[in-house]
Image (cartoon, rainbow, N blue to C red):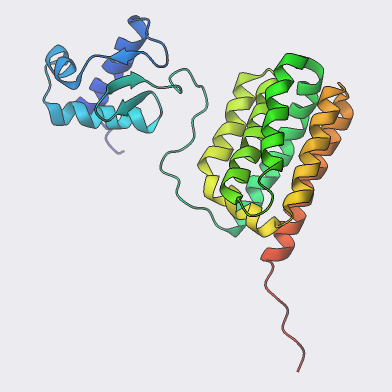
Length: 236
C-alpha cells in the first residue's frame, strides 16, 4: 500500500491564506497584506510564500497585480473551476466539448427566457450589437462577443453552478472555441442565430429559446465535424 502523501508547508500555507481571506471577511477585489507582511505573519520565507500565492492565483482565488499588490480574486467563491493546466485538446475532444454544450446550454436558454427581466436583457442586446460590428474579419472581437453572449445567457438562467460549468468550459477551451469559429466560417449565420435566441428569450418563449440554442450548437457541431473529416481519396 502506498504511503499517503503528507501535506507540504506550501499546502498548509495555502490553506492558511484561504482562512485569512474567509475569516477576514474579504471580498473579491479587496486588497490583501503585502508579501512582506504575509511572510512575517505566517513566519515563512518569501519563496515559500510565493509558491502558495502562485497556487492560489492559478485557481483565481487571488490576483497578483504587478506594482500594485495582492487582491482577492473573482473566483474565490466559485464551486466549479476551470483546470489551469489544460493547454490543448484534440479533434475528438473538440466534438465532445460541443456535445457537452448541447446538453447544458439549451435548458439554460429556456430558464433565461422564464426568469430574466428586461433590464437584465439590455446588456445581452448590447453584446450582440457589438458582435454585429465585427463580422468582417475582426475575429478576436467577434469571438469575445460570442463567448460573452453564451456566458451571459447561462448566467441569466439563475443557476450559479451551471453558469460556472459553462464559463469553465469556455474558459479552458478558449483556443478551441476560436478554432470552432474558424472552422464554422459563417459569421453572419452564427450572429443571426444568436439574435434569434435572444428574441425568443425576450419574448419569454422558453421552448423556442431552448430549441434555437440546441439547433445552433448542433449546427455548429455538424459543420465542424464535416470539415474536420479527412478528404476522401479519388478512385484510381
